[in-house]
Image 1 (cartoon, rainbow, N blue to C red):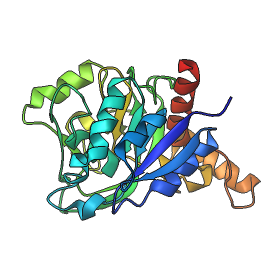
Image 2 (cartoon, one colour; image 1 turned 60 degrees about the vertical axis):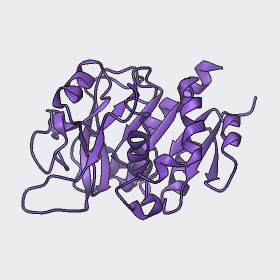
Image 3 (cartoon, rainbow, N blue to C red; image 1 turned 90 degrees about the vertical axis):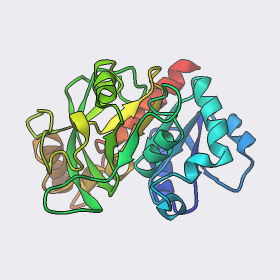
Image 4 (tube, one colour; image 1 turned 180 degrees about the horizontal axis):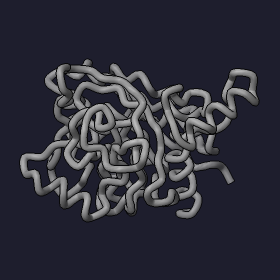
Length: 273
């Protein structure tokens, strides 16, 4: 039986499609870069979708606003309604939020607002710690609640926000925030830089109620190798990185923390067959 097919959707300005496709292939899925020039109806031939990071349409107007209106997104929404998994990473997360696919309560409910950081503004990149929360999310539900995953962030508009502050709190209670920023000790990150953008309730990712659509700001595809884990990362993954680098003569081979989310997708697709 052939492996499930995953479309990696490339809008103009996207620049993380190759890394995302590689991560999918490493866990045993068949990945194909699907460019915006193709007929939207061809998306129906795939079992899952990834909308990767970058700067779609140069982030004109605001991040992801134009990509969210592309005809591809209408078909993607229909396939998500059928239960097919959709993962949006960084700019891809912004696309899913702008298109109303996440959190999926009807219309556009949230925004990825400009970072709020003390004494600085704009684009910010660093390794952060994320904590796995109880959630129906197909990408994370195989992971132990409370486990910590170091992942890199790189964005200027990554703060989950809502016109109604109670909406984000309600999403947390409903299990629709499967990843939250945390300290190295596993506590919810209240302050910068552990919370890198000022996101309310330290929300790093939002999923729909069904759990098949995930919009996340950290980049798991950039953390698919142990050797890629930042030198500053402490804890279990820091130790794994150091051990792998010593064993492999500096290469640090072996799966990194970000690969676990793609493995979650593989598990779900195999179980759904």
